[in-house]
Length: 391
Ligand code: SF4
Ligand code: SF4
Image (cartoon, rainbow, N blue to C red):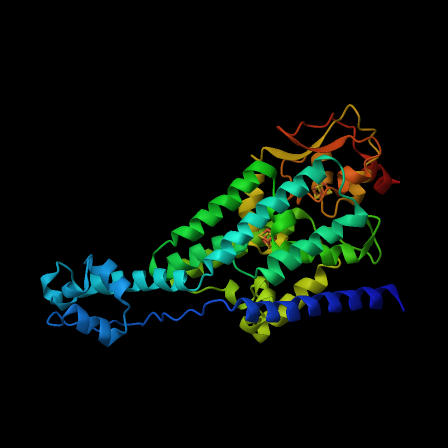
C-alpha cells in the first residue's frame, strides 16, 4: 500500500471516529435545544396589558420582568401605556432580552465549567512537559489526540476559542447585545495567549489540534512523508485579515454570519452541518496533511487576534544564540515559517503554535519555551538556506 493511500486511510478513520463519537456524545450529553425564537416583529398595542403582550408574542416571564423592570406577577396586569416606553423601544428591548435568554438556554453550564477546568489542567501539564523538553515526535500526536477527544468529541464544539469572538460579533450585529458569559470566556482565552503564547490554540482548541494531528500523520520524526508546504505568511495572513474584515462587516451591517456555513467546529456537532460545510471541512482536513493548520492561518478570527496578542506574550519560544550553532535544523522542522522568521530577524513573526518541534530537534538545547522578550539573533548568522538556494 502506498504511503499516500495509507495516510488517507488514517485520516478517514480518524475523522470517522470524530464524527461518530461526536454524534454519540451529543446524544449522551443531551444539550438543551434553543427553544426561544426571536420573532421579526413583536405585536404591541398601547392598550394591551403586559400579560396580553406576553401571551400574544409567546414571551417568557423573566424576559417581561427584565424588559419592563417589574418585580412580580401582579404587575403584568398593568397596561403598556403606563410605562414610559415607545413601541420601538419596547420592541428592541424585548428582542435583546430574548436573545440573551436564548443564549442562556442553549448552554449546558456544568459542561462548560468542566471544560474550562480540564483545559486549565491540560494546559498546565503540557506547559510543564514543554518546559522540561518532554514533548517529542513519539508522544506529541497523542496529546493532540487526547485534546481532540476530550475537548471536541466529548465536551463538544461549544465553547471553543473561535466561537467566543465569532459569536460575540454576530450577536452584536443581530441584536446589538453582548452576551457577558461569552465575553468572559473570550477574555480568559486572550489572557491565556498573553500568558503563554497561543497555548490554547496549540493544545486546547478542538479544531486546531485536529488539524495538527492530521498534519503529524504525514510526518515521521518531524520530517514529512509526503511533501508538505509552507505558504508564505504574508499570503495567509492577508487572506485572514480580509476574511475577518468581510465577516465583521457582514455580521455588523447585515446581521449575517458567513462563518456559520463553513464553521469547522461543527465537525463536533455533525447534525448542524450543511452540505457546503461538509465539503469545506473535508477540504480543510485534507489540506491539513500538507499545510500546517490551514483554518487557523487562513480564516480563523481568533487565530488573527491571538497572533496580534502573541507579540506581548509572557512566555514564548526563545533561542539562546550563545548555544546556537546555526545548523537551522529548527527552521527545517518547524511546521510553518515561524522559526525562519525569528532567525532571519523578520519584522513580522508568524503564529507560533508552541508545538515544541524546534525545541526537540535542536542539537545544543538552545531553544526553550521561556519568559521574557525574544532576543534578536546576531546579524548574518543564519543564511544557510539562502546559501543553499544560491548554490
Ligand atoms: S486559530 Fe486554530 S487553534 Fe486557534 S481558535 Fe482558531 S481554529 Fe482554534
Ligand atoms: S517555532 Fe515552529 S517548531 Fe517551534 S514551537 Fe513555534 S511553530 Fe513549533
